Length: 269
Image (tube, rainbow, N blue to C red; front, side, top):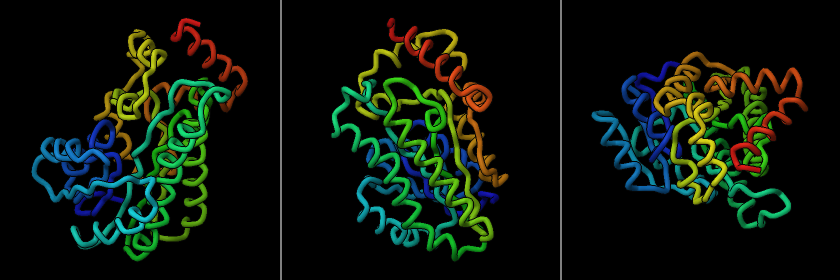
């Protein structure tokens, strides 16, 4: 689906990859509806995106009633809706399964999985009416390979992966394209935006090897938009995601052991 002149919803557009997605889409002539809980962040995104048909909407995607009312607001602002990019998400505190409380677990699942589900369910009837439409859901490399201390984040993103692949199967013979996106390490503020204090993550960010592997958010956004325009089924964003995808399919246990070893080195264990 070519994005030029299309109306595209981007969740989490107030920062990070979401902000860069909006900028890239506006550059290509798309009309964009930004959804985020951070109103100031969205205003900054609009400023950086420059001239374009952009609307901003304060939205908690974990609030089902609010999401169900959202398509009507997008259509009122832009006249139609052609695509959604479900980018919003958070990580969990870097805590093992045995020690993480249910409040944090439910917050991660409600935003990452249920928020994506609510968006898909709410917008799909409208997308099916368009001559051409698209759903792009952002999973993670953590959605296909586990990272210690991020098990519930990974579980939520694995659920997004399967949800997206199921949608693809169900919509294959329709005009609605579906893409699942697996970013690797990308330079964003997801840790602070998630309200997570992360010694492991901060240590990994200072590690030269990890820093070299991390992709700038604008480059990640370009890869994502290109995948949507090419109607790709699945896209790995970053060399680390590509490498781990290959390694995990080739030797799953060895790949997990490598992750455990590297995470232990970053945290000083």
